[in-house]
Length: 121
Length: 107
Image (cartoon, rainbow over all chains, first blue to last red; front, side, top):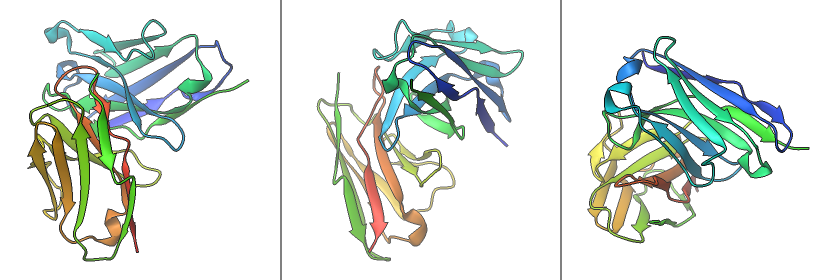
């Protein structure tokens, strides 16, 4: 059974940092392209960024709204995806979902349950 | 960037009704369009990709159509368990973009 389990969310002040983790099981993580998608309270979905597999050069791309502040990385030994978030803004508040791309296509066949990040003073 | 516009933003229909949700892209995206269902308090779930291909395990009352800029998601016979918000997503190129969502309720 495929599982994606996020952790690391919480309350942080504006300008602060937070690192999210997503531990996966049930599939070969090192072959998978992975992504983070977020959802502000009561709002729609926003793609945050993506990391390809190392065999596909491990290319990383970010949404313009987070570029330069957020960093995506992966540990293929620990089967874990990370999202390092720096210089957090109130607008970064929301649920952050870890997602898997389906077979190298740019849509998502598995989602984690999400972890809540609240940026507030 | 290509914008995705969904309509309506919400709808209310009776059990057994045929329901249609529309998604329009600001520029052509071929058939690079996916649909997701998000039930309250849950993560989204992939329903359809390639504009019309049903994801494994999704009930056959769901269907998708369209190409280029105009797409539709149809529920042929609305069931109580279909109460959710539905999102389209274009994936032809970065940035990946979602529509604003359509909330479907039971009348």
